[in-house]
Image (cartoon, rainbow, N blue to C red; front, side, top):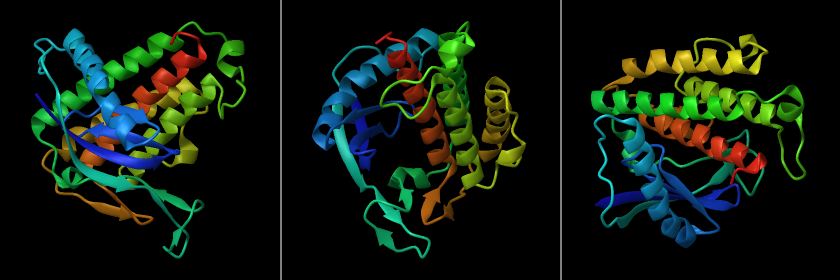
Length: 236
């Protein structure tokens, strides 16, 4: 099986390999080479995850994986005059050629399934954690677990806002983190089916966004922080 991969260099001082035809499948490395090596076991784990949930599954299990690097993006920053800066300013993340393609009905349906599985995994992970655990701070970490959950909801709102689809001002989101997660996800689930076949590409703050990039980022971000919380809890 051929795995078409785009690499994003400079994502929080690391490289991130994206499996472009399999949203939600990604791997990190200190550099592009490490990320490309890591994408194979990441795909194997991703395929096992899909195969556990989807009946029938749309991914083969087992077999050789042939990685094809098709695009590389170097993260850069823009100031408020849209001039490139070294490290401060707005971070412009990857826009791959594939992000131009409208989402198909099948891709929307599968994407919504994976979003639901991601959310179920995340909520099962934090279910039963008391306030002390949710608000515990960790050395070298930016957020508590509650802070991570707020960040997940806020990022998902932000992705929708890039396409002018947030539907609610950020200041109006509920203070309760679990209500916030629910409200933003309900909005995403309402919007995604309307984006089927949409040739919508919007530039915001010098960065391009499309429905495909929205789905790619939303699936990656929640899964990434699911693993983040597992590490904080000592589960991996």
